[in-house]
Image 1 (cartoon, rainbow, N blue to C red):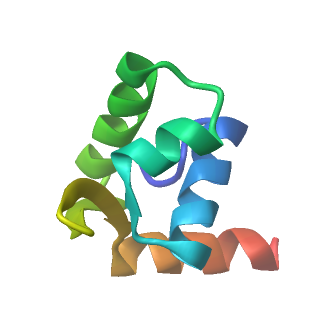
Image 2 (cartoon, rainbow, N blue to C red; image 1 turned 180 degrees about the vertical axis):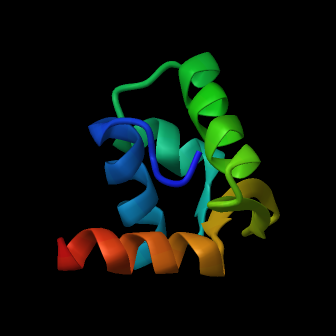
Length: 78
């Protein structure tokens, strides 16, 4: 997977890149996703090399990778 698979994934990736890293709890409160859907989406983005796990205020969370920044930069130029 070269990019995020849908608008929801792309929005999540952009939000984490612009304002992250975020704890999982914060992402659950910001997005209308159940915990299972959020973890599934993040797992897909991690498998694609776009997200990495991060510790945020002592909690598990996610941050974007350099590859994600490159993908997001390309998508903004289109």
